[in-house]
Image 1 (cartoon, rainbow, N blue to C red):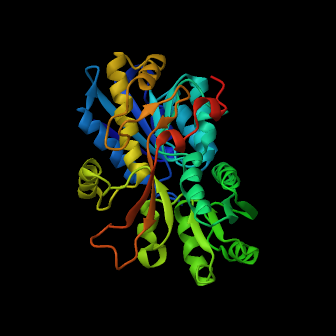
Image 2: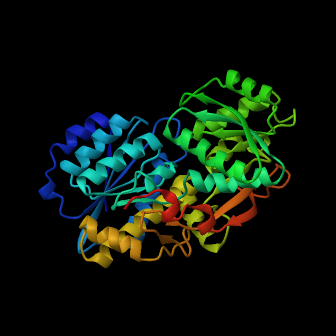
Amino acid sequence: MIVKRLSFLSGLAGLMMVSAAAAQGVKIGVLNDQSGVYADYGGKYSVEAAKMAIEDFGGSVLGQKIELVTADHQNKPDVGVALARQWYDVGGVDMITELTTSSVALAVHELSKEKNKIDIVVGAATSRLTGDMCHAHGFHWAYDTRALAVGTGGALTKSGGNSWYFLTADYAFGYQLENDTTKVIKENGGEVLGAVKHPLNSSDFSSFLLQAQASKAKVVGLANAGLDTTNSIKQAADFGIMKGGQKLAGLLTTLAEVHGLGLDAAQGLVVTEGYYWDLDEGSRAFGTRFMARTGRMPNMIQAGTYSAVLSYLKAVKAAGSKDANAVAAKMKELPVDDFFGKGGKVLANGRMVHDMYLFEVKGTNESKKPWDYYKLLATVPGEKAFFSVAESGCKL
């Protein structure tokens, strides 16, 4: 396996020197945020997960080595599309994955459609990827805004949190997460009292939190992720929002953010993830291996990246070709049978359907070992968590 780390400028220059004809083997690109607000959420740890999948597959497919390239899109759609275009046109990249940040993912997803290439989105959330923006070679793997809404939004509304106020990241992901959660809240008899948009990578949430506090909503829904979620929760504690009786809902909170917060600040949060390292024997085995390589346990983005890369390589082998049409057909035909997506299946719109899990973050007195952060509240069956093809709005 060959691994190349590309910055934006050096990546473009370097890729110009590589002819597509020279790229005979299968080449996979991991494109994500490696230096910004989502660097721990996916970042270099997702790259490591992709390496693990390639190694476990054997390092080659169709008799040739598998190459992995990686770059930081800086959470900027123009940067992400420029890198993806060079990878596709000059670098001989066959599939791009991870794609944290919905605005970047949607832009690269559309480019992949134009170029007849496969993209497997793992880190971005918007359900539009397999909805109105679906295409024949586009896939969405670990979770989406619909699954988060059904999990966290549905559970809290049913348990008495029937009035909500949103703090929403001001881009595609935040809008879709707020919209999908609002629908679930209303379906369960709740109401939304208001919402406020905040810029990506905010450092000061005081004015937004004061508006949420003044709303008297029972639940303050954080339709953001990464460091934005971490900072929101820390500053909410400073304002006494939880002590005042309001509950925080981290609609996209993963193990990485809980670790960054610490149990003192995060305890009691209800979160929805597609993976937890201590869920079962298979999850623990992967988590232990990942910890040995990185010094931390994986979240659902990193574990999902492993699953996505492994499934892609299995499809290439089964198709006997890296042709996008043939591989995409095999991905939709083959079951997803790994520690991440046990019993999983890929729908015609590219949505990988698998069970999701509702967790509550443990208190410090409940945690018995390092990274022992979650207790399982409920399993959400995949067919309930995700839209069906008919519900999704996909026009394929």
